[in-house]
Image (tube, rainbow, N blue to C red; front, side, top):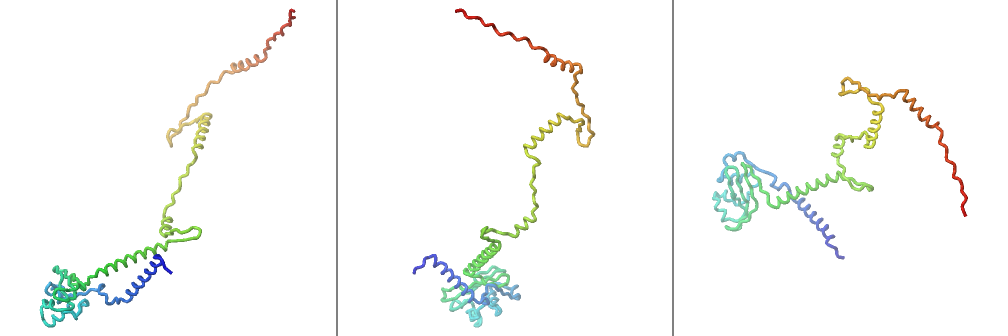
Length: 269
């Protein structure tokens, strides 16, 4: 049976992760010198490019290899120029920036003109550190990034909820606290609709015309002023009685006599 590329990818990823775990488990973190430093306070005030290698070759320095060529030259009381004629591990001063920075390189010499760099060490204010190699820097950054991403996914999964009828949704605790602390805004309710206001205004105007106000208050708190109401003059009683009699006499008057029908005449033959 042949498997597709999609089936191979998970298997390759699993194998890679297992190899990475085995390699990390096999590393003895006690031998990792990237996380430690060393200093001898007695040497710090007198450090200079001429004695910095003697300072680095102290027996208490965990970064110094006592099987190197520098130790042989030191025991034979030779100069450092004899290192070029030897084969093996040696230490050299690569860069100096007095009085605070010195860089020392550990290298494998194979011939007077051919060397292989093994590690670099920098001394800042008398404190010795090992410079990390490129692979260590990339591995550290990758692990930091993966840890941050994993932490983000774990935190996101803590707020994820699922229900068969609703599906997926987010449930944040801060959102509940904000909703509790948030003042509830009441919606302004209109006292009446537009139709009701127009209808009430019409009724009020009608009532005002029928029953005009007797007092008027120009400003709140002031004494009301009486309003003069103009009354229409009432007609005299005699004119009213005369108007009542006129329609009565008109209705009592006899109707005029109706004309008789025309006489029939005989037709002439």
